[in-house]
Length: 404
Ligand SMILES: [Zn+2]
Image 1 (cartoon, rainbow, N blue to C red):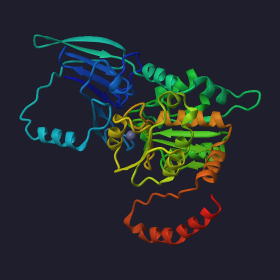
Image 2: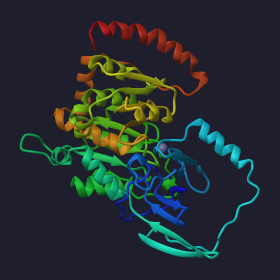
Image 3: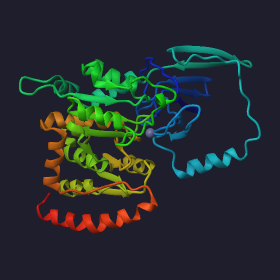
Image 4: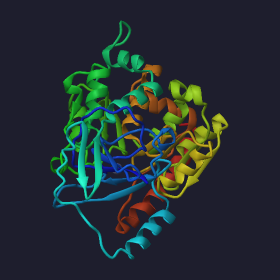
């Protein structure tokens, strides 16, 4: 049995070149019981399909987008051999198995420093037990460089004779994307140190609530609003969610973000080589992307909430891009949503268009029409819902007359 095991509170900046299942967490351990070998990696890596180790799955210890640390959330995710989240049947099986556990054994005297790259060997009973710490930052960066045109994004950020530098502010919210953001934006794209913030992963996210939205990423929003920035992005604690904003903190709803990317995938080298298959969204996500699918003659799928439902469509070769209103965007480059990928995708289409984020959205609405979207989380908000339906929908229909 081969497993990858990830730990969100550790910061492993080591070097690895092996592709793993796409698993989140700032440190990950891969356990291969067949050879009594355990691997440890940073957190993001390629899809298990590309994985020569054929891991059965991955266990991710992550608070995701919730406050983390000793007094807050501690979550566990299981990703299957295709790199995607476990389906209900698997999690039910796991639960049922837990009810039959009668004992477990631990080896308390193994002290393994997973912050340093390398191999550690231990003796457990009469067997050798090996832990290998690897780094998937390099792996992920190489993968992103094969998906996107990095020189083009670099030219956007650095500026050209025709265009002034495009200033970005990327916020890792003290989550696990920090080392990836530093490597990609500071080293690969030569952005200035002031282009990134909160890039040190902290066990408790520095007290932050790492949910990339207007409420919990308000300080990023204010910094973009009050500063000289053309683009802002924030990611949650385990790096799968993203928020995109433009100059003056112009907010892009996740539903619009999905639709704009769907309409512009031809600007991304990966999709030029794979072709654009279908699109998908979760049921509560606004149908803006449906309009793009119809215009482009692509298959469009609506699935229940949960990223696992996208995986089947990807495995069937019918889905290229998908998203959820809960700030999740991803493609078939992996079987999970990918915040950093979404930011690079946005920079790619902005580089190709020459437009600002706001100009991009306005042009999109003018071409495809606009879907209004808001999140209501409280049943006491019912009057607001009714008001929304009575007030906005007629307005929305009217605005359709203007093709806006
Ligand atoms: Zn998350």
